[in-house]
Each structure stands twice: as structure tokens, then as C-alpha cells.
Image (cartoon, rainbow, N blue to C red; front, side):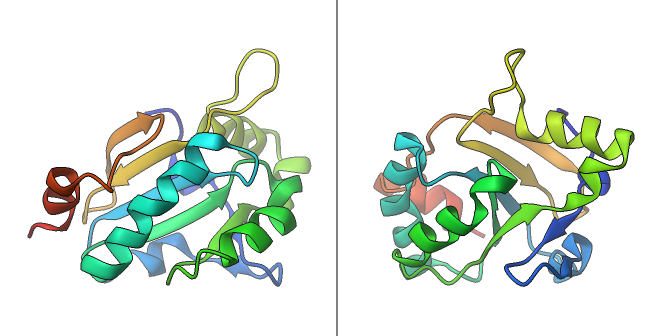
Length: 153
């Protein structure tokens, strides 16, 4: 696992903390997706996320996180244009003052040696809260067989 999700503080658009555990308390699996308005693969995935929203929006908890906290306003504006039922968050400012949280955030972002981030990056979290898989790169949910598999019980 690249990062412990327990060490990641997320905040909403208003800067209020988001309790990731509370979001996942319904027992559904969760997909946490690092997303950026400037990422071609992230933008290409939106067709698939629209298919999920039309087919099985209640099957999974889906959480989007800005790949760079500094881009959150631009990410949120672009994300809003897709009309999806989910929200986009950012990593909180605790990473600026807490060394352990900064290290966890770098791992969560998939930070590269030159300080870049990996996008898109997806964390599949089981209903128990454990990270089951980490997928780097574009997910092709728009493909019928993948959409069917993602939406199956």
C-alpha cells in the first residue's frame, strides 16, 4: 500500500474536515480517485464515471481528491461541469506542519522523485476499510464488460 488512508486528512470545498470513515460507514466498497483538471486520462475517465452514475451510483462510495491541493478550486470547477453525484475534496493543510502527515500525503499522491504526482491514481477500499488494490492509470469503466463488473453485487 502506498499510504495509510488513516493518515490522510481530507477537507471539503468550505475547508471543513471530511471524515472518510464516516463516508465509508455504510459498508459499501469505496473507490478513492486522485483527479486533476489538467490530466488527460482523468478527463477521459469521466465518460466511465457518467456511466456508473447512470447505472449503479449507490453500489460504491466514490470519493474524488484533487491530485494537488493547490489545484482544488480549478479541479472543483471542472469537476462540477460533469454533473456527477459525487464531490471532490483536497488533502488538508496539516501536511504543511506535520511531518508524518506530509510523508503520508506524498505516498498517497504517488509522489515521484521530482515532486510530481501520479494521475489518475485509484484506491479500491473494501467494506472493511482495507485497501484492496491500487490502480495507476486510466480506468475504462465506459466499456460495457468493465461497467457490468464494477456494478455487480
